[in-house]
Amino acid sequence: MVKRVKAPEKSIIRSAVGHLRAITEVTKEAINPGTITISYPHERRKLPEHFRGIILFEKEDCISCFRCAHICPANAIQMYPNEEGRYYPGVDYAKCILCHFCVDSCPTAALRPSKIHDVAFKDVESMLVTARQMEHVPEVEREDKATVEYDFDGDIKLIKRKEFEELTVEFDRPDKPDFKAAPLYPENCIGCRLCMFSCPVDAIKSKLDGNKVTLETDFEKCTGCGICARICPTEVLILTPVRGGEE
Image 1 (cartoon, helix red, strand yellow):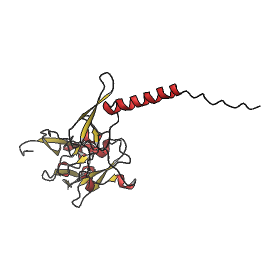
Image 2 (cartoon, rainbow, N blue to C red):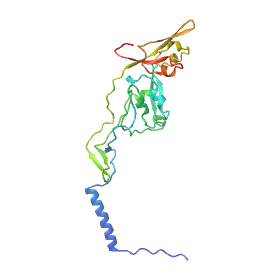
Image 3 (cartoon, helix red, strand yellow):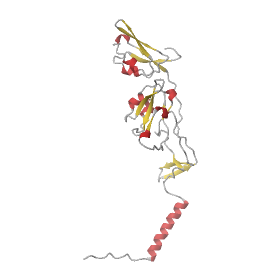
Image 4 (cartoon, rainbow, N blue to C red):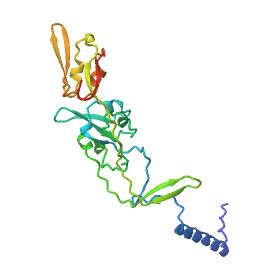
């Protein structure tokens, strides 16, 4: 036997109290909003100083050392050759985890951090940003009129300020000595020429004198990338600091 559920008894007083509470809450929110919702894109959250966003690239500072590609834990960075035979990095943002290991390891600050994070790609293929595309800062259309910051002192509150936060990070570049590759223990050279074949700027030449191989570095071409020093199996080559134009 199926029993019917009884309809709740209507109470005018209970209904009036419920409506009054709802109107009271709406009035409070209209006068003093207590929400923690940011009205993006008209408002933008204030980002931390060391926020890790899209990676920017300065081609003039790159020495093609491949360190960014070697250190990337997600294998998201590839090196692309240009017309002059130099190699520059490109980032596959379908793989990139924005750890910024590449930025931290770059010896010349050619890779720079930014606070740009709201980038839209039309498909997975377009998420591969080549070295040529890396040279240009992404165009950002901004509609924000205020910067919003969370306040966690006691209750969670939002502090809104009429500020315009720059999304590109400015920093002072450290003065670093120039480095060139030079043989430290030439007697250990086994003549494998791995340094010569791996040099991205063709700065290392070898001469065969009888059974002995002699290495020579063109200091005008050498960028101090250190690939030759890392690949040498007998540690013949080292990076030597150069100051004042003297090797």
